[in-house]
View 1: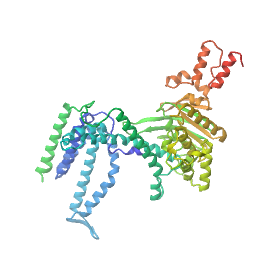
View 2: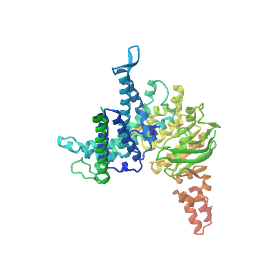
View 3: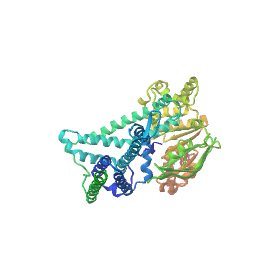
View 4: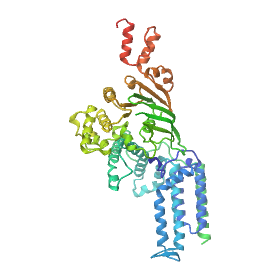
Length: 268
Length: 283
């Protein structure tokens, strides 16, 4: 049941995208998201769609799997669309009572929805093709310049990697606890809101206890191996750019130039 | 009161690259009152199998019947089924949550919608049945030892008065003494209450002394199914899949090879002792 959540999950397979340096993927995702907000006409969306489509194709992740995670944000998408539809001033198409749907609103709603879907698909390609450890390694390396202004980059990255590492473990544990309590007749699905909230207690107590125990064990294990923060720490697998990474950067730059020229400058 | 599994298949993570079959064409009949040992390696599908028996997992294909009724029929009462087929999970930490042991054991019967008095009576009985000391009734379950926690967990399921009791690795992580205590307790529950017991384990030595029937799982399939003596006759095949017959079987085999006329079918230490004494003419 809880295994269905795919947003932010890693999909284990081999592909050109999987093999890329995490820094490339981080920067590319960031650039892609920014590019979505620079676009001013339909051409821009077409170019972004083509770029995204080729990335999905290259990533070897089944499209079905990728969009399964989309269900969770469906609600958000609908709300955004409704707000855009009714709150944008302009030339009305239909109007009833005090609400009118305008041409501009319709256009904005559709474009906003596409933008959101692209944004989430883009970032999920990154998380689906990069292991959490690699991702935080990449993040640490990309954010390194911030150390100058005393941002604890290593500590943040370490916390993130631990948090990410524990998501699947705790999900699996939640699943087991749910089953253990369901075997004792617990019901998590029906009843009033208050009853359902109450029914979470037998789930949350064992989960929290186990999370604290795991945290203590982990802290102990880290201390036993003399962990003392990031200062002077070397990596077992340092990130090194390879040829394919440079090619990816070149492709990214070409994409950015094309989308800015066609999506923003040429056709207004 | 029997459970029947008919051509049950179960596939994890269907439609993804991680898809793998956890159960392949499993056909089993669990008659009432039997004491069964379910043996298999980690990942052999035994935990998945038992979760089918009380409807926690739905098979990808195939049917599960309880008392002749398909448990996945839309009008089948799953809650009632889970009371009748009690499943105790491997880690008591996954189910203990209340402030004290007594309240925790009350959780199961209360979910059945019983009146408060009946709930408390059942909880008291269940805790007594597992030999839990009165002194600990109102202690936090988290302060108990591993063996005591397990007793509370078993009591939590027993309080629902199941007809079938399934225990997933009830001896995991216990010391030899605690292990024997728990196994003796389970045997006692079977004898006194006449309930069906399915004991899941990866150790033959654990189950050999107690059970009437052994089901061996390997890679999602039923590998062997029969009386202990019958199953241990295949000890070479068992080794082939990384399991072993009980130590007693090996001793008897080696004695036989060394020229002593012992019966190699002795599976328990008591039987082996008699056999050996017989050979030396002292019995």
